[in-house]
Image 1: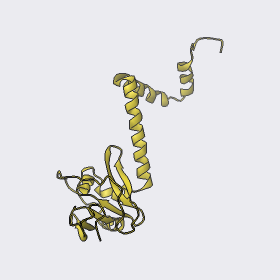
Image 2: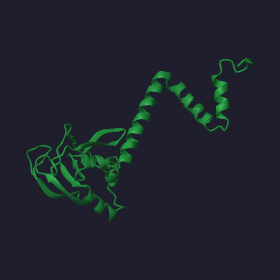
Image 3: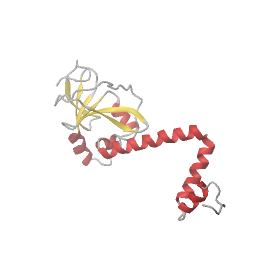
Length: 182
């Protein structure tokens, strides 16, 4: 198979860290992995210790990639809300392209044992929710200031736990909670 990342090398049969099957480009050192190979290996090695990651040169394909098997455009998959790096995934054949250093990145972020979960709709939905929460958090902190925002969060947490929170809110938001005419 021809490498669809660098478009120069050949994908040669190999193993990632000697663990599960892959096809490695002899030019760019990227890896083509079928999720079924990873999952089959993982099923028999649930307690595998991926060890400490050594710093490595990381590259990322930023343009759209073509699946080396189906020829379809691959999806960009986020790993976590706080990680900007994305993996290339082909849902047509359940294959993942790992650019040079991406396997090490997965190990660094303790995701090497969850590669198949990262690809799920639930995981990606949670990433979007986490990203939105962080965006609002940053916005509120900027708007209110760190100290005031922290006090507001503490008060909000207390208020949410109260059984009569609707009455407490009515008191707080009334222009004059002691006025008899309303």
